[in-house]
Amino acid sequence: MKCIVIILAALLSLPLFSQNYDLTVTIPNIKGTDGEIVIGLYNNPESFPLDDKQYKKYTIEGVLFKGEYTIRDLPEGEYAVALFHDKNADKICNTNFLGFPKEGYGFSKNFRPKLSAPKFEDCKFELKENLAISIKLIY
Image 1 (cartoon, rainbow, N blue to C red):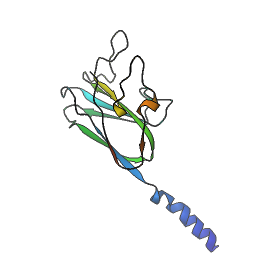
Image 2: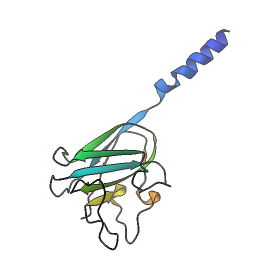
Image 3: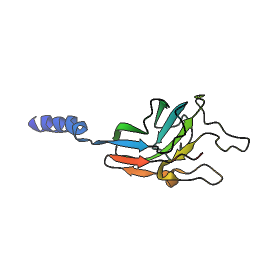
Image 4: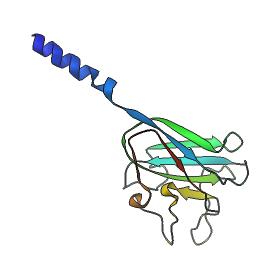
């Protein structure tokens, strides 16, 4: 009986030992404070960089954004970030007739796509401690 109680206590305390981390995303080159900054955090290669398929999505008013945003309490793992400056606050990254974004956008590891959307492998990073990344917007 004592053995069962000890095992049960050990299993219940496992969540107490799991480690979560913070990710700080800095955007050094935003043009203006109008609109919103939309940050998409992905942990699944199949969904990157699709809108509404993010692991977590954050929208910050441009006037409130101070150049960086911290995402707290993330489990250890592989992630990628896709973000854009939604200047007209219409909740979408507007594109031209060729499909290229008309609003500032960027990806983790400052990956610059050529003629197609990037792959998760191009932008992924390992979160195993508190981490700060910088993403320069492409206008």
